[in-house]
Length: 194
Image: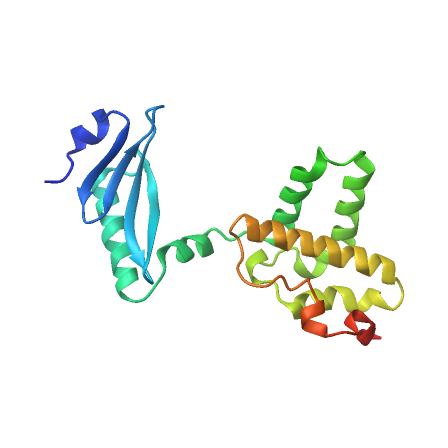
């Protein structure tokens, strides 16, 4: 027997099963959210379907059906949700700078990060989905400045690497960091670009 609209509204803290993996999660604060527990490639996944009252019982059931359909077709609902929440490189960089600001000794350091990224990285990467940045994209930023300003290019590369690491930690990208160019360029590194 599944949940009723009244039960969803009045349930105390805990987890309540509606059937076929759909659960209502009620926190101590009274906040209510929907989770679909499922298996993707042999791993248990809990897929968030939204919060009540924005997502009613009927809507949560519809979302659960749609998520199961996606899984039957071989899709990963968690990855699909992550892709739907894409973040551009510039927004990820801004979030990283804010997160690091308290650890920096002075405001000048934050300004240097912002300035070098705005000058060299944003024209090519700024509006790109941070999860889609490739080695070629990073090289497109670095090649024009490597011969004339190798120290600046090195700093820009390090800052791009930090932004992409931050994006990975936040679940906004997967795989190798394309700004960690040693694995992509071999022993000569960027010296081979001259």
